[in-house]
Length: 407
Ligand SMILES: Cc1cc2nc3c(=O)[nH]c(=O)nc-3n(C[C@H](O)[C@H](O)[C@H](O)COP(=O)(O)OP(=O)(O)OC[C@H]3O[C@@H](n4cnc5c(N)ncnc54)[C@H](O)[C@@H]3O)c2cc1C
Image 1 (cartoon, rainbow, N blue to C red):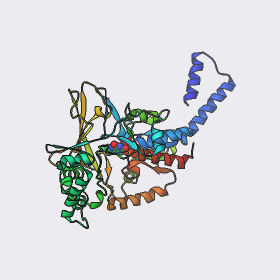
Image 2 (image 1 turned 60 degrees about the horizontal axis):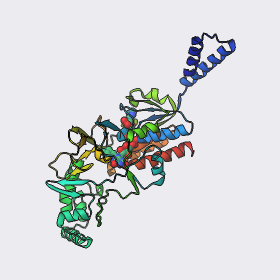
Image 3 (image 1 turned 45 degrees about the vertical axis):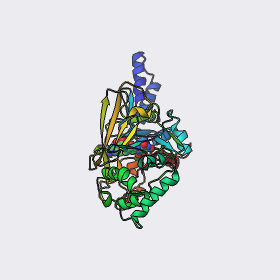
Image 4 (image 1 turned 90 degrees about the horizontal axis):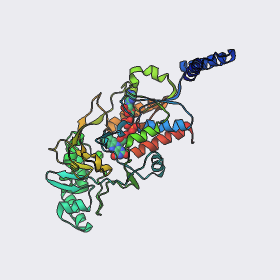
């Protein structure tokens, strides 16, 4: 319709009267567009302009498919959205560090941005003490003054043996059996209680499967081969992924569900799977977060991008100082305090609670999803699974390969 109208406008502007042949052609184009509008306009409707939706949209476009992306938020990017404040890229939904060992994913994401050499090395503050993370020789030296791996191992083994926990019944026992009393009390207990909103004794043991202890002086939080922060922020990556794709923001799928479903032959849904099915088997559970941003009139507030607060009395779990992700030297600084929060409908569902009950419930929804002919589910909410960004990209590329074939 657009091309037809512009051809007509062009002819009117040039005062050209269309010949009967041209008129017929114009009406033919108009008719075709109208028919396709009444039928289906797009090959894919993608609900969610987060990383999963954006990667899939990009891949679909590369295979000459037409896509319409809708998102209820006023911006693209979902939880990886970054916004410039005081010339600093602020991670609006919590610190996002890209790390992966997956070659395909690393090469893929590098098409859309340069990455710096940031290495995540958080520190923990417990009362007035400061410790390096993850638990490594620096931490052990700060805790006990030990200098060699043998001394650190002996100290930890002595504490574990004193506990004598053979079959851990809850998270507290599980953690004590893995790292001993000092690491648990100073660096695990308060943080975990805040994160889950429950006493560690009341939490299931499976939440903490591993608490890696590193017997080297290495503060690099991740073990992955590649790591870094996109130099211009994550939003630019998503913008490039969605280049040439039609995007409607501030648009909640559920407000006009039927209308949106009729816009395309197939739908990729990256919102909450239980909501898609109108909670027919019950509600899946999540943990939520609240972020408090502050601009400070100083160059450097805490000297590190991520500082965890591990004692229970401090209500937030960590403070992020965004400029340190990109080694910024601006006059001001922006910090974000991160408060764990109870989730209820209407709040942002950040972390799926993958305990056995919720997983069982999810499987019921998954059975419905697998029986769908024209609806696909993806992303952390559609698959009800916590995924890092690299896993999201890997899953979205896999879905694109299966659905659309290889390019
Ligand atoms: C606090 C926090 C820190 C993290 N840190 C890291 C990190 O350091 N490194 C890392 O690799 N990963 C990290 N992650 C994980 C990362 O955020 C996810 O992997 C990624 O954002 C998931 O992308 P997604 O597209 O699946 O979901 P989302 O980003 O949530 O995108 C889904 C989109 O769907 C939209 N939507 C939902 N329902 C509807 C609807 N009804 N109608 C229209 N639109 C809808 C939402 O608005 C959203 O924009 C972190 C996650 C959190 C919560």
